[in-house]
Length: 129
Image (cartoon, rainbow, N blue to C red):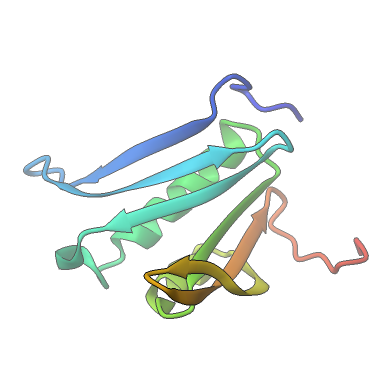
């Protein structure tokens, strides 16, 4: 299935309080040419551990599949940020693995943990079964 918007490279949504329209954070999908996208997000510290990001991630993943025709959504987090991994897990994403020392940040190598979810939400082995 081709993407619904092939010329668009990314989508970003604000996460705001309904009552005050106060910006709490944002979430995005960066599309690739293989019917996939990488999801990224940030949320202000006062809103952590309240379920806001999990709700937003689920909605964005659903929109990616149902409206954009994506086949795969991936996301990653630094090992030192397990809370972000919990969002991915609660969004039905599957652990792919760890990419060791993949970022050099402030003179220190950081490892990333990668997750994915497929449009059919099924887990597949590396041999395709």
